[in-house]
Length: 173
Image 1 (tube, rainbow, N blue to C red):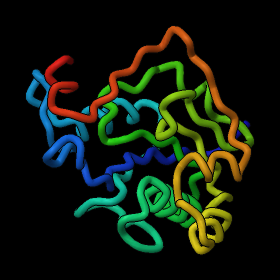
Image 2 (image 1 turned 45 degrees about the vertical axis):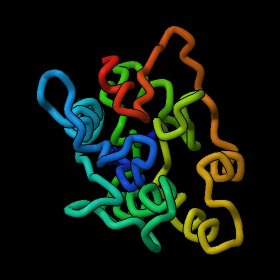
Image 3 (image 1 turned 45 degrees about the horizontal axis):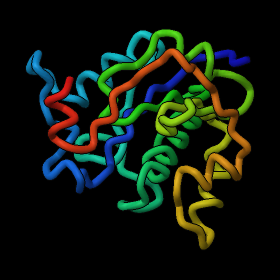
Image 4 (image 1 turned 90 degrees about the vertical axis):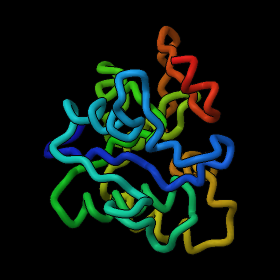
């Protein structure tokens, strides 16, 4: 298992193209933003939280516009250099973080939730491997990275999480 503090990372570098405006700042009925809900959901499970891929947070690494992997890479390097054993990730558009998820994800190798690949566990020692992956010619998709590192795919069949890609999805909450 793991021994030591865990970093939480909200991956927030997307363009929100289907949403039409900055999705992270969209508000739920309670008046709080999606990104605030994402942070609050992670908080009970981690020692510290970083936001990746937007102003005021960790810049994507090694460059902007690499999708979730740029944010994950920034978080892994931050974790490694600050004594965290690994990173629990969520997307900025994930207002709910299941309490049972960390126990299912955290282990000696990376893991993601089936159907929600941004909900993952990434050991900090993977930072150099992700550097190498991003330096190579590839699609830089999260799916390719998951396959490359043979991440476990965790199934929680009773779990239903909202997928917020359009304003209508937010209104449905």
